[in-house]
Length: 512
Image 1: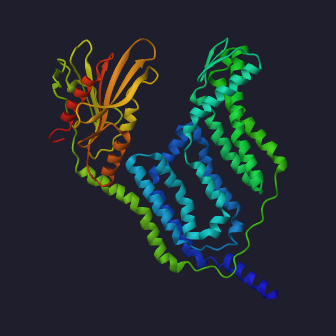
Image 2: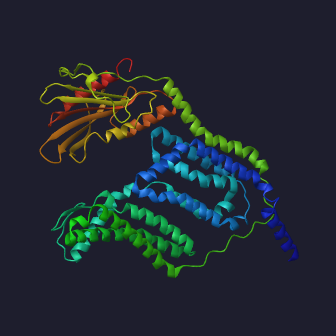
Image 3: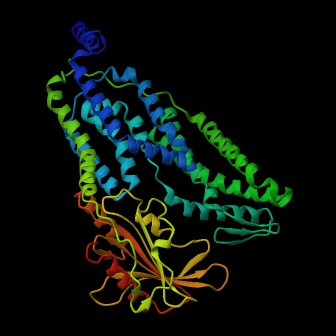
């Protein structure tokens, strides 16, 4: 027994005494050097992450995730003193995978991929430099970082539907006459709309994040943790349905001025805070004592100096490589800068441009575009409109797919036919045809459009993004854009396709 006590005492001195940190100080230096390099090189990604948190009320809670994770790690510093760092080179695969994910996200303009890489690099690097024992002690803190990734907007629609049904059910149970049409609710006093802001997505994701944290802090049983997290998932959905119900009741019995505007927002946050506190209070009676710490490692800590001589350069290379490749290919593409077309022809598919309707008179490009060509052809009473919006080769302009989403006002127009793929000839470019109808009134309009990357045209946004990403990844310089041909009424789409084909050939003609 005395021998065992002497060994434990020696281990304790080796891991916590003055000269103790020496065997593993190289590991600490390696980790800090790699993460500082990563943060500096990818500062733009972290800025984008913060802008996403701040720009949408849904993810504002995420500003707390990194500080919470840091506090959780600090709270286990005594546990960490019992385990030694044992680097695991197998984690290089994870670092390389995250680097590739970031690079693909950068060339394709997919922010989610960038954000995933920026968040997950922390636990992967910790596993790489410190190994499974250290990572296991702080596993929850590392996993909790997942809540910093802004993901979940796809749930807005389903939550709107559930909220509308719950509020209507409550109104019927309390005798309020109500009719529901989708997300619209009609009552005797007014018509209500369960908008995206009323879906409860903010409450849902924030309550889930804090509910998971509460379950970890106050329960040790997996069963109790899962039950509490289940309540944290269900309670905000039911609570939001009740919030909408009470909002409608206030409007019905006290006046609409109390159910909208600032009062509506204040009531929402007060209600959310109350529900969260009640959830935590109800969960308290079943709390458990904290778990015991890990058993101390046997033997002296591994001297990481030898491994760090090759692991640190390798890790730094994997960290630097994606950013360096992205910057290098960007310089190559910019050096081969080719301006896009500067005008549309005076005639397309046998139709003349309207007199005085010159491209030079068009308004300057908007939203960061390098070129916006616009011209009208045919009958002055109901002309055919041709627009080409694009970015030059080597330009860091906006995402063309974002431009496509603004082709028409979804509040004023709705698609009644299409989208369908059409082409003028078997060997001609393919286009998307879409028939729109005014939401109010009898107006109609037909759109025909396609995407361009270099000399290639495609109706598929997936193909467009793939071609554009490959060109950017390989440093090839290719202009990109979207061509839109439209006409009021319900004209024969075949004529529009012929004009679109002629316009595409003119845009990608010699020198383009």
